[in-house]
Image (cartoon, rainbow, N blue to C red; front, side, top):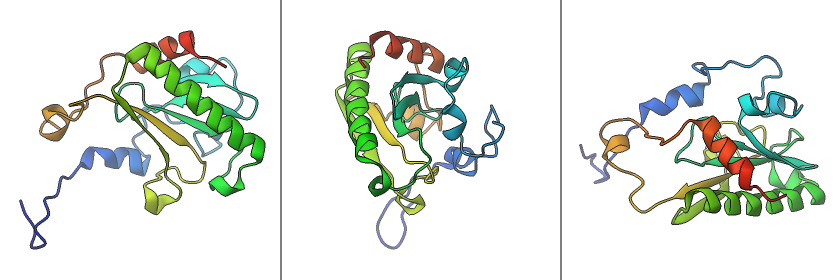
Length: 172
């Protein structure tokens, strides 16, 4: 269907569960920030899909991945804006992002990556209160009819299996 402005619209209502946060299959106790709940770093790492931990930052698989291997790098500290990171946090976010790209390449051989931050809700940050950098592997043709027409995202393995593979090749 075309609007008077001549642009086509593709609606993705399946994303509303993620945006609203009410249909999370694994509701978390306080704190309300799901990233802060992962900071403790205990036996729950496998449940939280944490891939790697550094002194100031950690990497975690996205619970709602755009593609297989989609992960995020974030500081332990609850901070929303990139300019509020300490120099040490900034350096470690950068180094951990490089390690993430290397690990995903070793495991999945993607054709390319999207890497970036959504700073603020209006920029697309649905969890905007805790800064996180996305690392999304991309393959030629990775947006296909299943997602576009069928409203279904296909993932070739369970997230915990992806996490285990990435942990196995992660460089600190």
